[in-house]
Length: 307
Image (cartoon, rainbow, N blue to C red; front, top):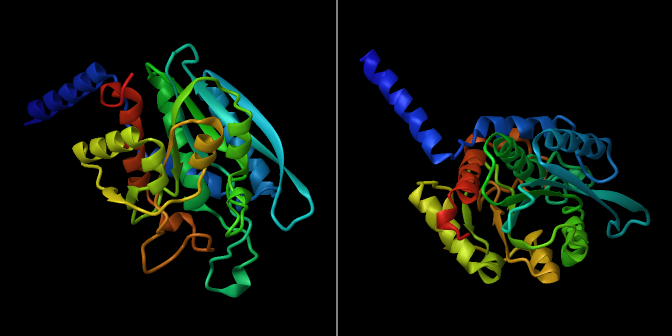
């Protein structure tokens, strides 16, 4: 029996080496989420915002081929002061003719305006899911890309100033991706994937409606592969259209971009989105791992996604 177990272990190692596809570690990603949340709220102008910026920059500088910092200033709707923002861009395989972008926002919302307790409505949120989850996946991808270089160019973009907007004014959101899209620091991006709110314990990922219009081919390829790989969080139904960082990329830079997002956090009956309940306890390593697994497939199994 012991011989059989050893043989199977060696076979798995051998197959892993043959495919060259690394394994995404959901627990490592969840640890990344916890470390971000330990800085507290990370809304623009806060101590947590400055601290997590340094955390991300320090980490990707150790892992990426090169790192770009794109600084900009922006206003928050209804406030008189100006804020400083930074898009953090971790690049791999710069010489490849195929360059793709995988992005997430690293800031958190300044107000828990959806909290049922009105006394919380002006308090900043922790943003475990809406802020830390996408970054957590990107940082684990950064680690894997260092260990197992990809055949294509990968640009991990950490967008700032996504979540300080107000309802009814789309462009009060996504300040970082708007600036990025109007001042492209990278040429020739083929397509983009945005990860947002991907840590929900009850993760359910329908097809975001704008994404289907912006890059139908990529949407179909990703959701088809999720089915093949038995990644259950990806649902083959079309959900609502959402204004997220993929929209400026498409509108202003012409990049065919899609959004992987679970806006019903945690479900249709309860809401943690933009509330004080957006905390690590309501996220899971298993959810991060499902999204990370598909991103690893996208990066390394290119025969399913084009050149």
